Image 1 (cartoon, one colour):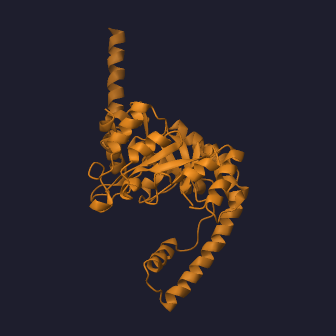
Image 2 (cartoon, helix red, strand yellow):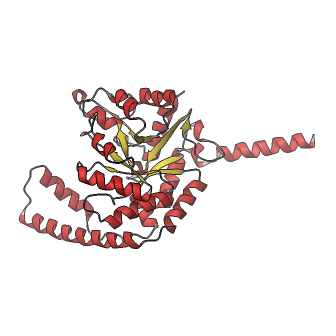
Image 3 (tube, one colour):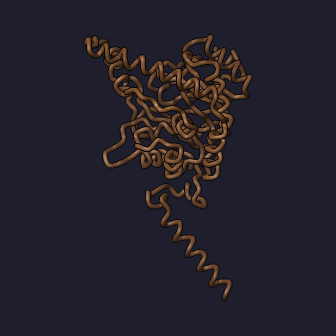
Amino acid sequence: MKNRREFLIKSAMGAAALSLSPLALRGAPAIIRKYNRPDSMINGVQIGCITYSFRSLPDQSAEATLKYVKECGISAIELMGDPAESFAGMPQSNFDRRRMFQLGRKMRGGEELTADEQKEMAEIRAQSDAYSKEVAEWRAKVDMKPFETIRKMYNDAGVSIYAFKPSAFGMSNTDAEIAYGMRAAKALGASHVTLEHPSNDAHTLKLGKMGEQYGMSVAYHGHEQQTFDFWDTALEQSPRNAMNLDMGHYIAAGHPDLIQLIEKQHSHILSMHTKDRQTPEHGKGNVVWGTGDTPIGDVLKLIQKNKYNFPATIELEYQIPEGSDPIKEVQKCLEFCQKSLA
């Protein structure tokens, strides 16, 4: 009787603790409640999330980002550069990025800047160039211990980092910055770094060779320029070059052969951005999952059936409904994946 009474008391206490957890309070799906640790491996398919999904939240620190990820129930992520680099002590920018983007968007749209705007843009660009040099110098010298600390902090919370995406791999970045990005990714526990495909064969060759040198794979992301053979040259250049496929953008580009592409290139896909977009005929919109033309469920089932080992990365890009927030919406995306893989 004593043992039975102790068992009942402990069980009640455990149930009460679970019911009061932040995950339960936010209405998170049952699959993520596992000893108060996130678990987004669903029936053999790893569902991940790129931390870009939380860009609209005010606190972008590494600690806050981990909190967002845990609240969503995600156990594996593609980590953007800012949370990790700010944690490691990267210098803060002192120019108005938002204003630079506004003026740049006006120019790209074919509008002519006023004389005052031209002067303003020139000043911001000068500040940006100076800041880029400062960051490059910092990246060339920074110790890797802060990145190892982040890895431990995330791993201890039940979250692994499979990809790292700092702004260190562009054609304007120095070799020292590229090397830094790969070393930092390794310290974080990532298997690959990600970047937008530069559309420059010489640069993908360079990145692939540096990946070989530093033991880090380089996965190229694409938007609507993706085609069936978009990655072929880079893949031929180095065994360290790989794919960061974006299924939603592929559909928005008007391609009907997404499943065939995945079947052909699955061994080269290291992670896959997952979102729902419409075909060109329907407007190319970024929409709530299940309301667009991207066969998310079919792709997840394909991964499950063929036991592909790359994660499907939730990327929240549709407009957040009024009254909601990125955490709630990523939870809904995770629930969509759960139902698709049931």
